[in-house]
Amino acid sequence: MKAIQCVEWGLPDRLVLAELDPPQPAAGQVRIKVAAAGVNFPDALIVQRRYQIQPPLPFVPGAEVAGRVDAVGEGVTKFKPGDRVVAFVGLGGFAQFVVAPAVQCALLPASISDDVAAAFSLVYATAHHALFDRGALQPGETLLVLGAAGGVGLAAVELGKLAGARVIAAASTEEKLEAAREHGADATINYAEADLRETVKLLTDGRGANVVFDPVGGDYTEAAMRSLAWRGRLLVVGFAAGGIPSIPANLLLLKGASAVGVFWGEFAQREPAANAALFAELFGWLASGKLKPYVSYAYPLAEAPQALQALLERRVIGKVVLVP
Image 1: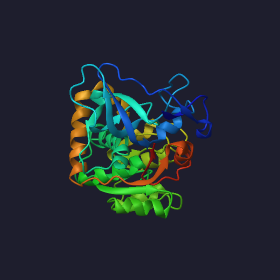
Image 2: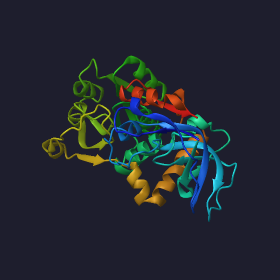
Image 3: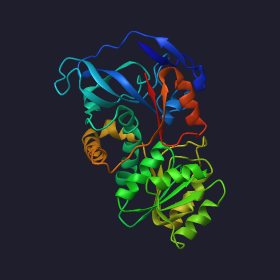
Image 4: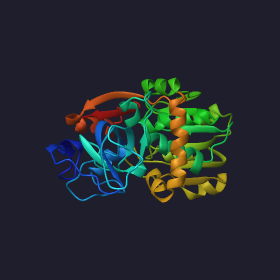
């Protein structure tokens, strides 16, 4: 099979298109013929050895896929060859075939396309876990979403609206803000041109945001913290800007606020029953049309380096996928 392989640490242009033997499913696993693979920011970090997980070289990146079951391992009864599934695999997805634990797969409704399914799991699960579990977002509260036009940002905008919150979307260009408005944002901030803290203060009549969803990090985190309302919650989701910020603890004290870490992958491993309930709700909303994942571009497998570089340069709106 063809696969994108990381053979040395570095930027995405060091990845190679390799010919590998297809993996064989072990007990409890299924093998999937990949129709589409989601491309995510952690994929761009892991090949640079800048992520929490550091697999040994060489490896195939790619955390989420959609496709058809091709073979099943011993003990698998829930799936059979030919079933359309979506799976969170962690590694191995940028390939024509991948194996996944059956417990990390879900059947795909016929109405959901492969590219949408491949772009769905990681960002919507992260946003759901962040807003509802870690952030306890309530109807009527104000949610500030940084990086609101990225995959996880748009997911947070949509889920925030479903929760009955007022959503303020912040991003760096008018094109990105328009995408956020199309997905339900009530107000927008171009933080490349306007002062984030002052604009949040203006948009909330001085009260601030109850919840801040922050996948960006860098210099924006402190400004976002200063924009929190009393008892506000800062959700630390990621660091797309590159810098891991220091959080002034005195701001938490003065606002009676919380800084809360969000690591959906670890949550899924440690709390599988809660994660299954999360996905049941998400897939129900997706099938009913309440969620509308946005896939802006589909790259061929060989162009995985270009897709990852676009993410690193923050040029992607919504999600992009690879199509083997």
